[in-house]
Image (cartoon, rainbow, N blue to C red; front, side, top):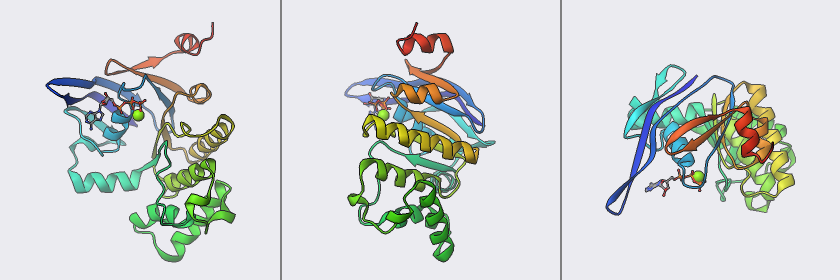
Length: 234
Ligand SMILES: Nc1ncnc2c1ncn2[C@@H]1O[C@H](COP(=O)(O)OP(=O)(O)OP(=O)(O)O)[C@@H](O)[C@H]1O
Ligand SMILES: [Mg+2]
């Protein structure tokens, strides 16, 4: 269970304060797949940064599986993030000097899994994203879709309970985007992990169990009728 309670975060812009999140609330059950929508600048990435503990709120709380992560100090927050969270970003964020398998192994090594065991798990994970044969390739020789599949393998290899994806298909063509999304959703479902996915893609919102819209600093549940209107339906 992920609980977001009265979460606020402001940024200073010149001499005015921009309140990006304004007492946002949400409860997300374990294993739920939740799409987060909202216009550019509405605070979607800010929200993910707070959940992962990269950033800290001005006030409010985030609780994950009974632990209040907003109360953790920096070293514990880093450990918590490494162990429990997997990330997928719009621009893949792979380490260019490492090959495909090394990129995936990195998340295991950060969690103390090394040597033969790390190689075995990385290879198995790369098999699941269909890249077993490319495991010794330099990441910059891969296509965008392949790079995003490496990023998905890296996000899941250490079996995190929570996956955060920030516009993971924003940089892919439509067909590749759809394949990458189907893969991500199926891997997340198999593991029973929770997925928060920021997206502008209607296919993703249609496959998610819930859609939350970030508007005026708060999270609004987008119900089926409102979603129809949002998607341009009847
Ligand atoms: N570190 C920061 N310092 C100052 N302002 C920030 C910072 N991070 C975010 N902001 C501001 O907060 C607002 C929300 O930004 P955020 O990146 O969360 O939006 P977003 O919903 O992810 O947008 P997009 O869809 O374009 O990615 C923006 O106005 C942005 O300029
Ligand atoms: Mg963003």
